[in-house]
Image: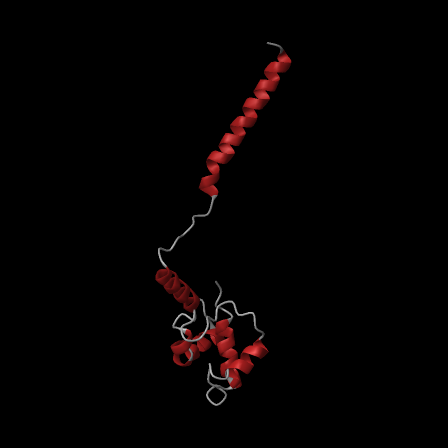
Length: 131
């Protein structure tokens, strides 16, 4: 066999060996996927994880939500009689208007119950709700 062919075969062998090592080790460096068995467990995980990371205004907002909003929007804010409040695309001003003014035939006005600071705390909590 000529030196050129031996060199070519050696290069191919080394390349294949490097690919084998790369793909063989890649699962070791991949992050582990955590799966949750059912929707109820997923809701609990989302609820627990959102309440554990809450600080300041968002924590106060959660307390206000829990006492006044959860009966309609659900304990986990994923909706019940009222809609899910996750990943809201509405502006803070629009959310304030909805909370203060309500939605005719669907949601009562909370203008007398919540101060402006309360509404801001609620919005801070709602902004933590991400899918």
